[in-house]
Length: 174
Ligand SMILES: [Mg+2]
Image (cartoon, rainbow, N blue to C red; front, side):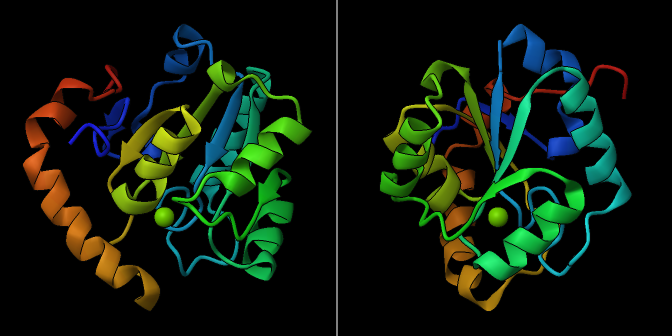
């Protein structure tokens, strides 16, 4: 079961208070794109995403989109948001992201993953041995390829619901 329990849980990336990143000494964020940062059908970054990235830049946090989606989709979105990206990441496999970490000489203790899927994001974080915030998907619809994963995702979340609530990160101002 521990393979599915994330380090932290939040309703969405937009519910994570900014001081959380500072308290946890996060210097690099590997953020999933589809249904984590924006809905999978958004081709352009929304206002929420733009504002969040600006705030994180002010905190000197390196924000990198890491997505299993193809280069064209990820690259276009990331360049509009003016952030780095890693596409076709093959999560939950870790070899591509491990290579990326080595190439950039990142320290794994500085990295935080953020993602909305158990079977890709959370398991990948375990293989990589980095911390992760699991979120709920931003919208209820998914890419067809994600539908099977989502079915199992829901079952897993039900099984570990109590554990998720224990590690939930909330914005106290809400
Ligand atoms: Mg996703």
